[in-house]
Image (tube, rainbow, N blue to C red):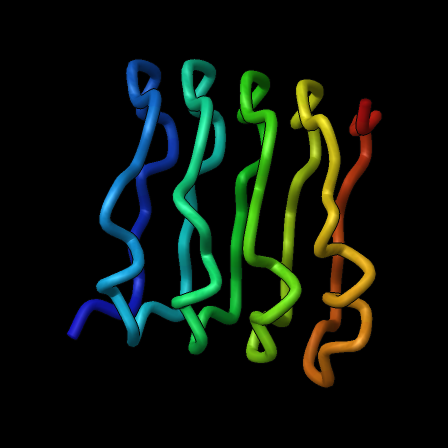
Length: 108
C-alpha cells in the first residue's frame, strides 16, 4: 500500500491521473512542477494528511478538498494560476486541518 508519493521537481509533469485508486495515500507532494496543470478529483483520498502543491504555477483547479477529513497540511503557495477553491470553506470545517499555506495566491 502506497502511503507517500513525491513527484516534486518534475519539470515536465503536466497531469497526474489515477490517484483515486491510492486509498491509503497519506502524503502527496507535487511541488515545484512548473508545467503541472491539473489533478483528478481528490475526494477518494480519504486518508490524505498532507498535500503540497506549492510552486505549481500553471495549476488552475483543485477539486475534492472539502471531503478530506484527514487533511492536516495544505500548501498552495505560489500557485498563481488558481481560479478558485470552492471546497476551501468545507475544508475549514474538517476536524484535523492544522495548517494552510497560500502566500502569493490570488484566486481569479
